[in-house]
Image 1 (cartoon, rainbow, N blue to C red):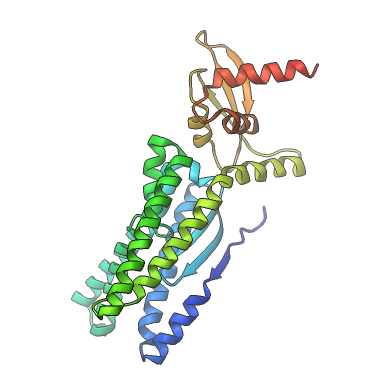
Image 2 (image 1 turned 30 degrees about the vertical axis):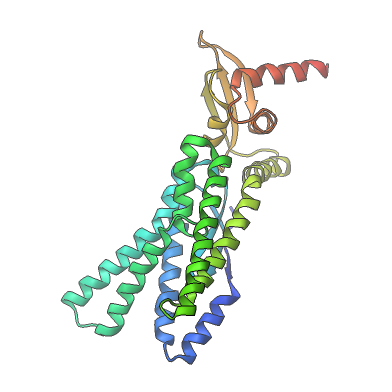
Length: 297
């Protein structure tokens, strides 16, 4: 088995922020925040690996960081929510541990208090329901349980753009009046950009996951498979969302008498959802696939 390779990408604006802090004589503050970000993102990666997902990239930005995960995490609401919440919870744990050290140990008070504050702010900031922050992904996961991944993504992206726009406006007004740090405007711009990027990428996430597994099947001749049993009335979108990101899915459709009436591969399931929507039932897809197979003979 090959080693997992994780690509780490740092937004150029991180360096800009570091230089600005260094010129202001606050390099250690920036270093504390940057280290907190790294631990925050490692928590995401560890929880993702616990769900059997492959971490492909960690991208660090001035207002946080994003982990890119292969395996269709967008279709697994419980996994996406857990992975997203791992970051803020870890930041709060760091803040709590530092507070205990401050209370019972003899650390540098100024630096320890700053570290505590930085992690509390990092946790609270990432709970804002906007991309690329963790709160945006938790929101999408919660909405996906009710309205499906595509509609949930559109709703979360829409809210992110509203939040980004309000942050830009508030930052501009605050900078003009001297009552708010202009960094709020920069955060709003980044939220707006990341929301657009998520909107463009989300429709292809499921397809990328399935094609990756199909490529493995074609190249090796075999891949791990998961057999799922479901009744004909089950929504295809619900089944597709529950399939593993690592194993090639095969759905056995079982009739009222307990006998199998047909099977659907993950690709056939995806084709059916793309053509007929996520609410199409498995019985309809089985009949459609049978008809297509019969017309070829």
